[in-house]
Length: 189
Image (cartoon, rainbow, N blue to C red; front, side):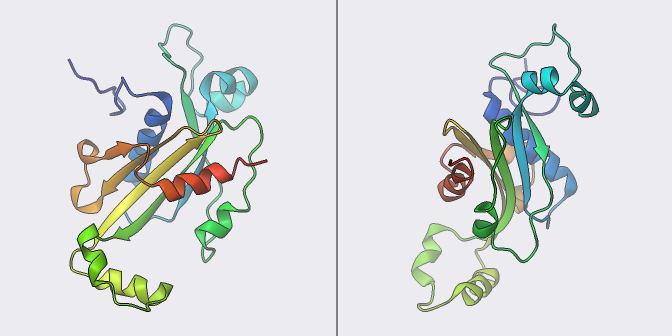
């Protein structure tokens, strides 16, 4: 018996993990070299009861017989992240209404293995460092999807471009702590 739902997400995973994997699967279908994408996470049952028209447009049939263990979260993609704006500056401008239970961000980056840290030339600024990383033979392209809830819960999914398969997606709550912290700050009063 498989532990995977028709959507490819693990059935035993909690609502936040399922939402992260759903977003990762959606972005994966768009291919690589995508801009950063921001999502509001809303409680699916609350969405069905308070916004039935929107829920219907999103294909969230109100089926009381459908199992919903532990609840579920529906990701709703937001407007594009403005090109040319630093991600930390953009996140600093976000405020969420009370109906939003959490948020998620999917972004692609280049990364190096920890062993490459010792070879980073001293004194490189942001642009020069990015260029050095882009030319490094051990660089890897990664898509990070990070989600947080108002209560501080967090989860993330990492997908390497050279292992672009749903079975090779790594999940965990502390994979991208800095980005999770920045997303959590969007809920600060």
